[in-house]
Length: 208
Ligand SMILES: *[C@@H]1O[C@H](CO)[C@@H](O)[C@H](O)[C@H]1NC(C)=O
Ligand SMILES: CC(=O)N[C@H]1CO[C@H](CO)[C@@H](O)[C@@H]1O
Image (cartoon, rainbow, N blue to C red; front, side):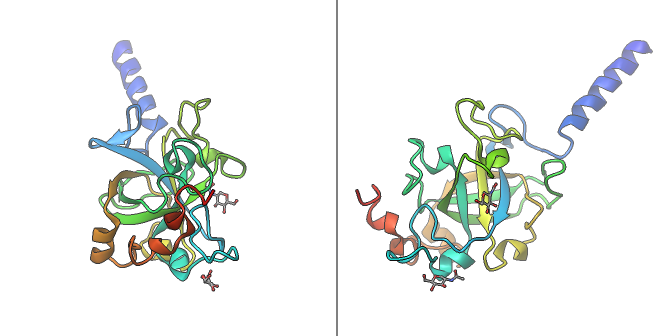
């Protein structure tokens, strides 16, 4: 009986640690795909891919209102560039796992997919340290164990409209073709229609 009780307690303990996170393993994954954490933000700056006019820090309208995201540093640029990162203008399909981080979000039904273009960096610095602190010192994980993070722009309520705002759903992520995604859902920017306007599409080395 004692052994059974101990086993039961151990199992309950295991289940409770990450009760609401569906991803597991190292790196965290779910059904064979890599996992990431998500949050939302809204700002009026053109961001680290230069998606605004050359002469000021405004955004293009689409950079404010479409499905765009700030990626954590190692994803944004493996060489740790903070401007015109290698992944500027790439698109990621995010699919909810049904999981979330305890105390940092709430349940979103599993299997909802939307495609976001990377147009910004979520830097590894205050106030972004809990979500975007992946570095060699942290074992390339943020505080909640994820190797990648996407901060989703909600400048026009587009994250609220899909029911993700403030719920910060855990997702799986994979690269997809932006233009195909844009054809299927114009809330995803296209590379020819939209990303081609960004400074970093014209000067991928940052114009130096
Ligand atoms: C990162 O910091 C900016 C402010 O500099 C804030 O708007 C944004 O919500 C933060 N994102 C995360 C994921 O911490
Ligand atoms: C809401 C918003 O940020 N709109 C800006 C989008 O970008 C254009 C072009 O820079 C600006 O004129 C808008 O103010």
